[in-house]
Amino acid sequence: MKSYVIRAALVSSIGSALLAPETSYSSENGDTVWPLGVQTVLPAILPQPGQTSLYSYTAFYKANSYRDNHGDSAIPDFKLENFIQAVRVVHTWDVKLDSGITLSSGVIGSANKIKVEAFGNSDTDTGFRQLYLTPLYVGYSPSENLHLLTGFSAFVPLGSYDGSKLANSPTPNASYTQEFDLTWFPSPNWEVSIAPTFTVNAKSDDTDYRSGNIFNIDYLLGYRLESNPKVQLGLVGYYTHQVTDDRSDLVELEDGNRLRKFAVGPQVFYAFDQTSGVVLKWMHETSVKNGPKGDSLWLEFAFPL
Image (cartoon, rainbow, N blue to C red; front, side, top):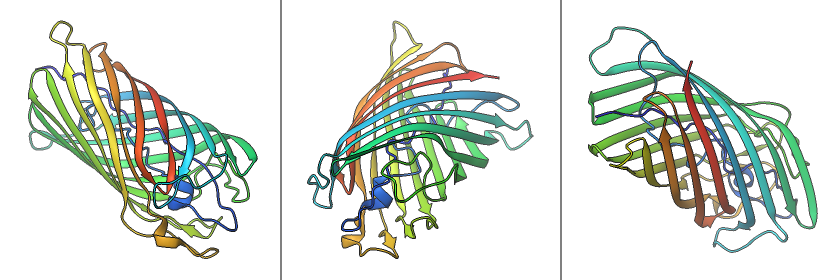
């Protein structure tokens, strides 16, 4: 069975800086450094040993409400638009290991244009967002039908974060993420993929705020057309659950401001060959607490170098 390789890897679904003196917001303003819903195409499959791939990710996220701990609208006149472009390079090392085990490394750079409206005010910012560094992925494929991957990564903010602004392109803090990816082909036409991550956030020196740690799981149920096996139709999305409280030296936080989200939507994947392809997907958020509620549209490409 052929596996058409494309790995979606980056796009942040939200990115705002909102901290009014009388209010506070989850995961510092509902933002997450890990891109929610990004791992929806063959997440456990990377380039073959000795090969390098280039990935391009373009996304647009729009939200018209910010939800509180009860799921109700919390910020008057809230609107968020975030246009993001990211580029990723992944190399799998040509080393001799036990059968089915691979070692890879990757780096991602991202930039965005963000617009935020709240409390009758509006702000826009454009610039670099962050670097995402993964010194080592460890992959294991016990068979053609089952693939596993894990890796430890660091997010490094790019640019200067200004806590007095509504909109900021860079993230306010560094963070560390552990990935656990699984891709399974129960039959030649069907794919089931899940990609759990656990993110530990460092304290922001700019805002004296520390976001809680976040568990996220992206998912895909995909079907490859028998009439054209290069085309896969999928149901994709993510579930996000913040497992520890936010902490701030400046304001008192009610109920820990723990972020929660569920999203679902369609995806279309077209493979040019076994190492390149294009993905278009849309995801709608629901059951949101302590964060923006919106929709994201993604266009992604992968090519070998």
